Length: 241
Image 1 (cartoon, rainbow, N blue to C red):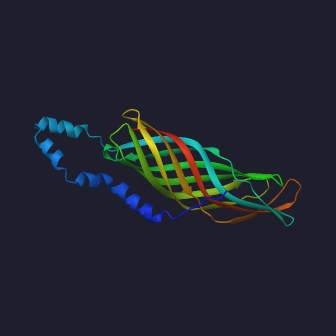
Image 2 (cartoon, one colour):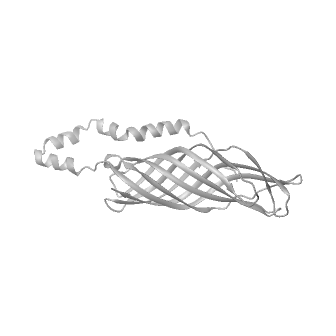
Image 3 (tube, one colour):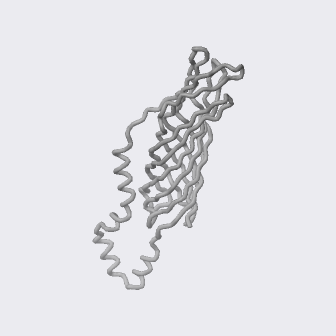
Protein backbone atom coordinates (compact mmCIF):
# COMPACT_ATOMS: atom_id res chain seq x y z
CA UNK A 1 0.00 0.00 0.00
CA UNK A 2 1.30 3.43 -0.87
CA UNK A 3 0.50 6.59 1.10
CA UNK A 4 0.52 10.03 -0.43
CA UNK A 5 2.90 12.14 1.57
CA UNK A 6 3.67 15.83 1.57
CA UNK A 7 6.19 18.12 3.16
CA UNK A 8 5.41 18.78 6.80
CA UNK A 9 8.37 21.11 7.33
CA UNK A 10 6.75 24.55 6.76
CA UNK A 11 3.69 23.83 8.90
CA UNK A 12 5.70 21.84 11.43
CA UNK A 13 8.02 24.75 12.09
CA UNK A 14 5.12 27.12 12.71
CA UNK A 15 3.25 24.68 14.95
CA UNK A 16 6.36 23.74 16.95
CA UNK A 17 7.15 27.40 17.56
CA UNK A 18 3.55 28.08 18.59
CA UNK A 19 3.41 25.19 21.08
CA UNK A 20 6.75 26.04 22.66
CA UNK A 21 5.86 29.71 23.15
CA UNK A 22 2.12 29.41 23.86
CA UNK A 23 2.41 29.65 27.62
CA UNK A 24 4.77 32.63 27.56
CA UNK A 25 3.01 34.58 24.82
CA UNK A 26 -0.45 34.20 26.34
CA UNK A 27 0.81 35.17 29.75
CA UNK A 28 2.52 38.25 28.28
CA UNK A 29 -0.63 39.46 26.45
CA UNK A 30 -2.24 42.43 28.27
CA UNK A 31 -5.46 41.50 30.01
CA UNK A 32 -7.05 44.79 31.15
CA UNK A 33 -10.32 43.36 32.42
CA UNK A 34 -8.69 40.49 34.33
CA UNK A 35 -6.01 42.79 35.73
CA UNK A 36 -8.64 45.22 37.02
CA UNK A 37 -10.64 42.41 38.60
CA UNK A 38 -7.58 41.06 40.37
CA UNK A 39 -6.55 44.54 41.51
CA UNK A 40 -9.95 45.00 43.19
CA UNK A 41 -9.51 41.80 45.20
CA UNK A 42 -8.11 41.83 48.72
CA UNK A 43 -4.51 40.65 48.85
CA UNK A 44 -5.51 37.32 50.45
CA UNK A 45 -8.00 36.45 47.69
CA UNK A 46 -5.48 37.47 45.02
CA UNK A 47 -2.93 35.10 46.52
CA UNK A 48 -5.52 32.30 46.57
CA UNK A 49 -6.29 32.85 42.89
CA UNK A 50 -2.62 32.58 42.00
CA UNK A 51 -2.30 29.42 44.09
CA UNK A 52 -5.24 27.82 42.24
CA UNK A 53 -3.43 28.04 38.89
CA UNK A 54 -2.01 24.65 37.95
CA UNK A 55 1.77 24.53 37.63
CA UNK A 56 3.65 22.52 35.03
CA UNK A 57 3.48 18.79 35.77
CA UNK A 58 5.27 15.68 34.56
CA UNK A 59 3.29 12.75 33.18
CA UNK A 60 3.62 9.12 32.15
CA UNK A 61 1.29 7.52 29.62
CA UNK A 62 0.43 4.35 27.75
CA UNK A 63 -1.11 4.18 24.30
CA UNK A 64 -2.34 1.43 22.02
CA UNK A 65 -4.61 0.80 19.08
CA UNK A 66 -4.45 -0.23 15.43
CA UNK A 67 -1.96 0.91 12.80
CA UNK A 68 -1.56 0.55 9.05
CA UNK A 69 1.89 0.63 7.47
CA UNK A 70 2.47 1.68 3.86
CA UNK A 71 4.65 -0.98 2.18
CA UNK A 72 5.93 -1.61 -1.33
CA UNK A 73 7.53 -5.06 -1.58
CA UNK A 74 8.65 -7.19 -4.52
CA UNK A 75 9.95 -10.78 -4.57
CA UNK A 76 11.78 -12.25 -7.58
CA UNK A 77 12.33 -16.01 -8.03
CA UNK A 78 14.03 -17.32 -11.18
CA UNK A 79 13.39 -14.03 -12.97
CA UNK A 80 9.69 -13.96 -12.11
CA UNK A 81 8.66 -10.99 -9.95
CA UNK A 82 5.56 -10.59 -7.82
CA UNK A 83 4.32 -7.78 -5.59
CA UNK A 84 2.98 -8.12 -2.08
CA UNK A 85 -0.63 -7.47 -1.13
CA UNK A 86 -1.56 -4.35 0.81
CA UNK A 87 -0.71 -4.78 4.47
CA UNK A 88 -3.54 -5.35 6.94
CA UNK A 89 -4.11 -3.25 10.04
CA UNK A 90 -2.40 -4.59 13.17
CA UNK A 91 -2.29 -3.72 16.83
CA UNK A 92 0.48 -1.52 18.20
CA UNK A 93 1.60 -0.18 21.58
CA UNK A 94 3.57 2.77 22.88
CA UNK A 95 4.67 4.72 25.96
CA UNK A 96 4.92 8.49 26.57
CA UNK A 97 6.79 10.51 29.17
CA UNK A 98 7.02 14.28 29.39
CA UNK A 99 5.44 17.33 31.01
CA UNK A 100 2.48 19.68 30.68
CA UNK A 101 3.13 23.44 30.63
CA UNK A 102 1.37 25.63 33.25
CA UNK A 103 -2.44 25.24 33.24
CA UNK A 104 -2.07 22.34 30.80
CA UNK A 105 -2.02 24.60 27.74
CA UNK A 106 0.47 22.37 25.88
CA UNK A 107 2.83 19.47 26.48
CA UNK A 108 6.25 18.23 25.42
CA UNK A 109 7.10 14.53 25.54
CA UNK A 110 9.10 11.54 24.36
CA UNK A 111 7.28 8.60 22.74
CA UNK A 112 8.30 5.07 21.89
CA UNK A 113 6.04 3.09 19.52
CA UNK A 114 6.30 -0.40 18.05
CA UNK A 115 4.39 -1.29 14.87
CA UNK A 116 4.25 -4.56 12.93
CA UNK A 117 2.93 -5.23 9.40
CA UNK A 118 3.08 -8.40 7.33
CA UNK A 119 4.15 -8.53 3.67
CA UNK A 120 2.39 -11.38 1.83
CA UNK A 121 3.01 -12.64 -1.71
CA UNK A 122 -0.02 -14.75 -2.74
CA UNK A 123 1.50 -16.11 -5.96
CA UNK A 124 4.57 -17.58 -4.24
CA UNK A 125 3.33 -18.07 -0.68
CA UNK A 126 6.15 -15.97 0.72
CA UNK A 127 5.53 -13.72 3.73
CA UNK A 128 7.47 -11.89 6.44
CA UNK A 129 6.92 -9.27 9.14
CA UNK A 130 8.08 -5.66 8.97
CA UNK A 131 8.83 -4.20 12.41
CA UNK A 132 9.03 -0.43 12.95
CA UNK A 133 10.42 1.04 16.18
CA UNK A 134 9.80 4.78 16.55
CA UNK A 135 11.61 7.10 18.97
CA UNK A 136 9.82 10.44 18.83
CA UNK A 137 9.80 13.89 20.41
CA UNK A 138 6.34 15.43 20.30
CA UNK A 139 4.44 18.56 21.24
CA UNK A 140 0.68 19.18 21.41
CA UNK A 141 -1.45 22.29 21.90
CA UNK A 142 -4.80 22.04 23.73
CA UNK A 143 -7.48 24.41 22.47
CA UNK A 144 -9.75 24.13 25.56
CA UNK A 145 -7.11 23.41 28.17
CA UNK A 146 -9.31 24.67 31.03
CA UNK A 147 -12.22 22.36 30.14
CA UNK A 148 -12.87 18.68 30.86
CA UNK A 149 -12.82 17.88 27.12
CA UNK A 150 -10.20 19.47 24.90
CA UNK A 151 -9.29 18.83 21.25
CA UNK A 152 -5.59 19.09 20.47
CA UNK A 153 -3.20 19.08 17.54
CA UNK A 154 0.52 18.52 17.46
CA UNK A 155 3.59 17.36 15.61
CA UNK A 156 6.44 14.98 16.24
CA UNK A 157 9.85 14.13 14.84
CA UNK A 158 12.60 11.71 15.69
CA UNK A 159 14.36 8.55 14.64
CA UNK A 160 12.91 5.25 13.41
CA UNK A 161 14.29 1.86 12.44
CA UNK A 162 12.42 -0.64 10.26
CA UNK A 163 13.53 -4.25 9.77
CA UNK A 164 12.19 -7.54 8.49
CA UNK A 165 11.67 -10.72 10.49
CA UNK A 166 11.70 -13.64 8.07
CA UNK A 167 12.64 -17.31 7.91
CA UNK A 168 14.45 -16.94 4.58
CA UNK A 169 18.05 -16.72 5.90
CA UNK A 170 18.21 -13.01 5.14
CA UNK A 171 16.67 -9.75 6.29
CA UNK A 172 16.81 -6.01 5.71
CA UNK A 173 17.12 -3.06 8.06
CA UNK A 174 16.75 0.65 7.40
CA UNK A 175 16.62 3.71 9.65
CA UNK A 176 16.47 7.47 9.51
CA UNK A 177 14.78 10.73 10.44
CA UNK A 178 10.97 10.78 10.65
CA UNK A 179 8.34 13.48 11.04
CA UNK A 180 4.59 13.49 11.46
CA UNK A 181 1.46 14.95 13.01
CA UNK A 182 -1.26 13.92 15.44
CA UNK A 183 -4.66 15.12 16.58
CA UNK A 184 -7.12 13.93 19.17
CA UNK A 185 -9.56 14.62 21.98
CA UNK A 186 -8.45 14.57 25.63
CA UNK A 187 -10.78 13.98 28.59
CA UNK A 188 -9.54 15.24 31.96
CA UNK A 189 -11.07 12.52 34.12
CA UNK A 190 -9.52 13.87 37.31
CA UNK A 191 -6.75 16.21 38.42
CA UNK A 192 -4.18 13.48 37.81
CA UNK A 193 -5.70 11.29 35.07
CA UNK A 194 -6.42 12.01 31.39
CA UNK A 195 -7.68 9.63 28.72
CA UNK A 196 -7.49 10.33 24.98
CA UNK A 197 -8.56 9.10 21.57
CA UNK A 198 -6.71 10.25 18.48
CA UNK A 199 -5.03 9.75 15.11
CA UNK A 200 -1.31 9.90 14.29
CA UNK A 201 0.62 9.68 11.02
CA UNK A 202 4.39 9.32 10.70
CA UNK A 203 6.41 9.46 7.48
CA UNK A 204 8.89 6.56 7.64
CA UNK A 205 12.34 6.35 6.01
CA UNK A 206 11.60 5.58 2.34
CA UNK A 207 14.91 3.98 1.34
CA UNK A 208 14.52 1.07 -1.09
CA UNK A 209 16.33 -1.95 0.37
CA UNK A 210 17.49 -4.89 -1.76
CA UNK A 211 18.14 -8.12 0.09
CA UNK A 212 18.39 -11.81 -0.64
CA UNK A 213 17.00 -14.96 0.94
CA UNK A 214 16.04 -18.56 0.25
CA UNK A 215 12.57 -20.07 0.18
CA UNK A 216 11.66 -23.48 1.63
CA UNK A 217 12.71 -25.22 -1.61
CA UNK A 218 16.16 -23.63 -1.52
CA UNK A 219 15.47 -21.18 -4.36
CA UNK A 220 17.22 -17.84 -4.20
CA UNK A 221 14.75 -14.99 -3.67
CA UNK A 222 15.62 -11.35 -4.38
CA UNK A 223 13.51 -8.96 -2.33
CA UNK A 224 12.91 -5.23 -2.64
CA UNK A 225 11.35 -3.54 0.39
CA UNK A 226 10.27 0.06 0.87
CA UNK A 227 8.11 1.87 3.46
CA UNK A 228 6.22 5.12 3.08
CA UNK A 229 4.47 5.79 6.39
CA UNK A 230 2.46 4.45 9.29
CA UNK A 231 -0.99 5.71 10.37
CA UNK A 232 -2.61 4.79 13.66
CA UNK A 233 -5.83 5.18 15.61
CA UNK A 234 -5.14 5.07 19.33
CA UNK A 235 -6.47 5.25 22.85
CA UNK A 236 -4.18 6.60 25.56
CA UNK A 237 -4.15 7.14 29.32
CA UNK A 238 -1.83 9.64 31.04
CA UNK A 239 -1.04 10.06 34.73
CA UNK A 240 0.24 13.44 35.93
CA UNK A 241 2.53 13.67 38.93
